[in-house]
Image 1 (cartoon, helix red, strand yellow):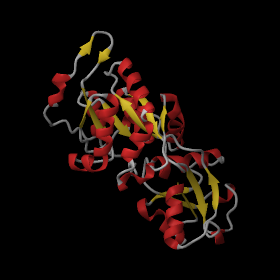
Image 2 (tube, helix red, strand yellow):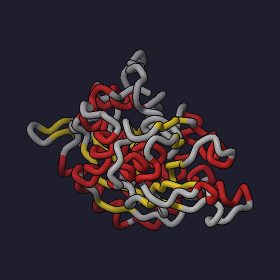
Image 3 (cartoon, one colour):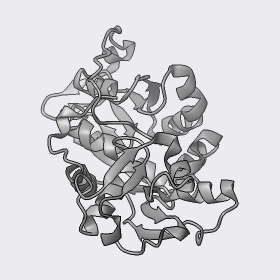
Length: 301
């Protein structure tokens, strides 16, 4: 998924649209939840119906064939709108990132059921070769660049690395959130260290014609939780179980459909895996590392 700026923004209630025409197709079974004939799907990092059809149209068709149900796209402007759509029963399934899931779950009690893994999805802390920095202790009092506030791999991941190394990312050093200029700042020696996605690090080395020895990795974090498909709490558990089983059985075709589009190249080599809420506790720990304890306060884009 694209980077996600998650914290410190206002909640945008974008509910000024008419109820979905497919809502009449949803039938509830007392005590067992909804068994909708049409499943409404939102993707938090793709804005607009045209973009959804472009990036996920092939996946939509394969998912319909897999589940034997119609899949209807439900565009959302941002993560806040996805949370609101879940709360107002306008959407049944949301595809989102780990950082977003933790916050959306706190707000909506949506249920995670399948994740799509991402190869090399972990964070690192790197420095310049001429910095002389080889230990966490030497980072104290220095400036370190990261990407976007709330990004799983560009903010939460490296913050958790710092905590694991005995540093307080809020007090022991100055963290500068620089967006796409994060690694350029390290190259220019504007900062002494950088923390972010290993994939971004690899791309940076390739673009600069540099070697890892030019920007040595000081610390590597654990593999980050995967992007996740979550179901509305109103969906029957039996349907969630059915979707999980059918999608796992047709994993190869579904992954092929997603990766048939260049925009989704990050999922090349990915797998579908069953997940549960506890698999995202490390993201909650990372949020706490940057001083966030009440996740429901940070649903804004």
